[in-house]
Image (cartoon, rainbow, N blue to C red; front, side, top):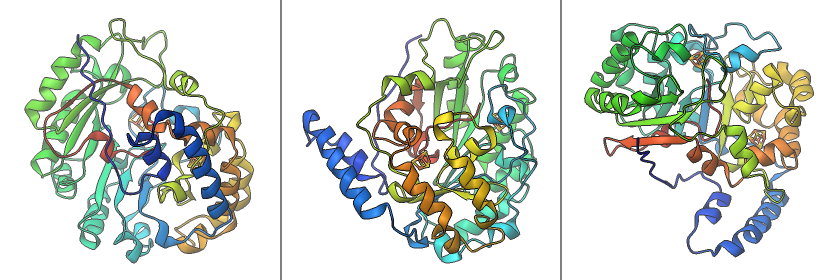
Length: 387
Ligand code: SF4
Ligand code: SF4
């Protein structure tokens, strides 16, 4: 199979200067590192001790539910070392977010670390409420597409006509559930079709293994036939004896790609300042990114452990269900994270100028069927992927 991978770079207004420099053809390669270093120093001189204000927030990554009916083996749900039970951001709770902030947002991504947003039955109300306050906001996210009725998906589609939702379908009828354990291919396709009929823009994401690599092109054809806007096959977060890596397609694990891009000179640009985005976990806690909350619940990387005592100390003061978001953003938790992230090695590895390149290298096959944006536009800018 011939992989068809289109290198793309789409300028998003809130991408940081760092990315502008690294992708600018006007700046010779040899000057870029120096340029970025100066930009980093100036940036942090100006921002590292600042108060974060609501007005700076332009994007949300929302874990609308921490529940999921599937059991994908490599999901963060399987790696919890702290209790993180079923939580949901109800419509009532969501309305506690300041309406004037919602009306200024450019993007909301319904993704999250530990659940599938479709297990939140009020998502249709939340999405309609957001679009009513801010018709121009781009809604994105990802889902296994398994639960809820076709009527529910159809209603949801009407709020995703100018954004897009990524459906995770890892094969065809005979292979999909080998990785996406507990889901049913036919039910997911039915729900995706209902979402598209409702006006939603759908993308198909296919995680590639030895057992499904021969189905990539057939799946892409089905995606086009049912009206998806695009199709992308990517490498898994991990492989094991049962879920083996493909043999015909070259794949690299994300952690290996990160190692390839290790750069002692790279500086971190923390999401709230660099991209104007924050992460809302389903329990109501507010963080700079999904990594921060995931690290607290799973402790998957010792380099990022600075976050654990901070969340332990401040978790009662960072919950938007009980405190105002403005108070949380200007409070001690965000100040401490912003200061620590500047030099933290994990942050420097995850949130540096190479972040988008790492994401691009996970893609082994890609097709766009309609000129309505790309999957990158509707997923969180972080390189984290579930399962
Ligand atoms: S990984 Fe670190 S630098 Fe990146 S958004 Fe999270 S806390 Fe900030
Ligand atoms: S990867 Fe997604 S679908 Fe699979 S168990 Fe995790 S949250 Fe559920």
